[in-house]
Length: 158
Image (tube, rainbow, N blue to C red; front, side, top):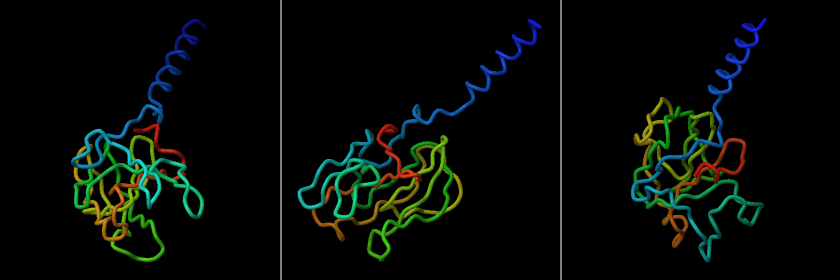
């Protein structure tokens, strides 16, 4: 009986230690030139980059990480590329992005032209290039928009 109890506790410990706790996941650097993943603040004309910031039609459903137009966008950890994610219904110069999953998370990166929409990448490998935000939103702080697939707040991962 004692052996059975000991085995049960040991099995439970192994199961608990193997479970991925998403709250402990942290994004590695997303963009060349911003190794600390600095968040976009507020622009006079375009609003703020934090999750939940006010928008004309609702609230901001992601977090904006500063990234210069044309900069390289990197995998924040080992990821699977799961297809295209377009932020807008109508086409424009920045209407591209990618669905990704890794570390138990599902998320999207908008305003990025990926090198590929499928496959897998290791942490730090190039996902693609930031599109020309200034062509569409002159004067905005250019950025990668990070949005969780379930539209929850991604801030805790940064």
